Image (cartoon, rainbow, N blue to C red):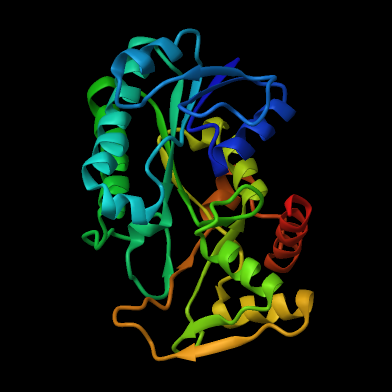
Length: 296
């Protein structure tokens, strides 16, 4: 079985490629950047180039569509690129999947689509209007898959990721910044009371959730893949102090529009797929710190 991973050279994609290879799938990566391992097939290409996309789809049975502009700062600084890659790129993937009769497209979406809803959100929670360009393109991707299924009967699975962290993460992501500052004994700035938080998910657990979603139970479903714990900034600092000892902190007033965070239910993933994260935040943070130490 050939499984194609668009964006397979990225942070999450590279871990998904590892998991698929570990489980003996024939893995093909579609990305502009060379994969981190040499024992998978690589199609170098651009999602916005339809010819590139179509060339990568021959003999493919399943597609994990992770290729996207995922950095929210890039989305704001290059809005046209974000829309083209995330939306036109997804359209190209759907057209190729239909032309080559792919079994299913599994989309990497995000829990950002829930916006600033307070309390617990499930896959049934109505989505509010997006308050960020990046979020708007992710909602658009979801709607493209759902409407494409209505027109062309192409099966899909939409996976809404919590906030991932772990080896190979971008250096401008919050946990990466905090760890580097803690290592250097530089002060970490906390805005407000530090009770704002997220459902962080260790990247290997997230990759495992993607692979499990190949199960037929996930066909034409939207499923949250997030951490079991709602982790506040104060808890992050506490765990960093358990690892590094003293971690200086600088307190600042709350920023206008700061969001306390949402608790993301993963009950559907438990019931449909038998999946839940195995790695606690404490354990995952320690693993990430060891990784950072090893590369420095």
